[in-house]
Length: 156
Image (cartoon, rainbow, N blue to C red; front, top):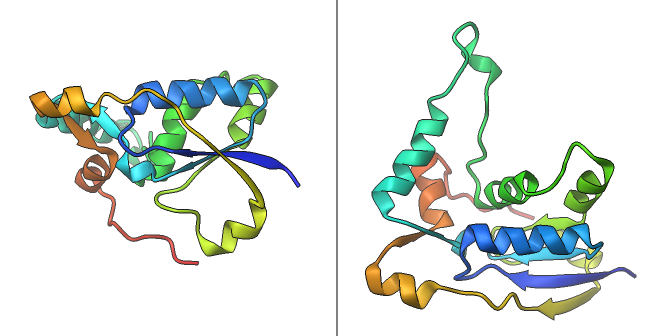
């Protein structure tokens, strides 16, 4: 059986959290991230929403169906952020991305047999207390709902 590190993304700042996950994956560790929708993004709500809504309006002039396409679900959004922090043009970056599994909430029942040996791990850094004083953060679930996620959990 393979050992996976179980890491909870609740109240972790998205960028700092994903960079630490990317480092661990490059070192060869297998990681399972749960509660991706509760990760937080620092900044004012208006600025964050405008930044990602502008990305959705970018398309090619000749054929708008060609993309670029942006993820709207919290788990694929977080996985995409981790992917951008890895050298994915090289084989070691692709292998590192394969070792990272991200879930919206808890691990679904159909994937439970895959993770027999889960080792709880903690990434220590959380700035929610400081950010909540200034009210300058939103959750990843809030952002994804704003950019088009339908809030439907994947059923087993």
